Length: 112
Image (cartoon, rainbow, N blue to C red; front, side, top):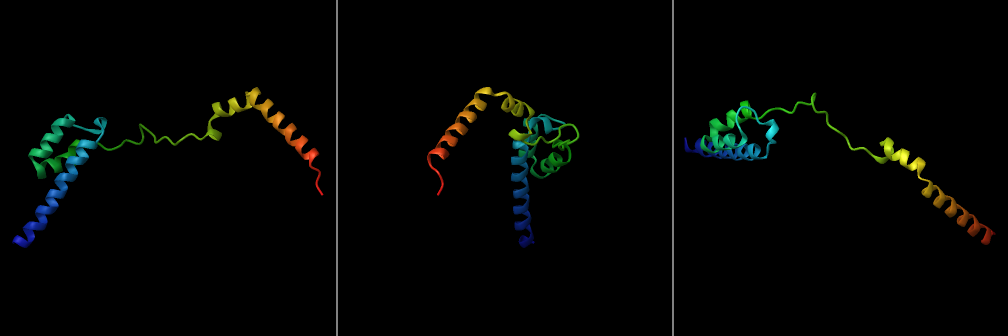
């Protein structure tokens, strides 16, 4: 009987610690039923029952329909950034001057 009790106690301890950490780190908007601090107290005082109640009732699921995952906007996908590039006269003038300087350097060093 002791051979079975020790592994079960270790599993119970692991589940309790995992539940406590999950409860503490869960965002306040995902907590259902009771305030988050009360859930933490329940998990601490009633380890096994509190863990079951937390995962069954307390922790809400992410609702992907209401809040879609946003992906990062890269500069070439951002219309505002692209408009800025198209109207930046100072940058266009600088590029033109650099091209002229490169052309002069090419003229000074003829190819063999």
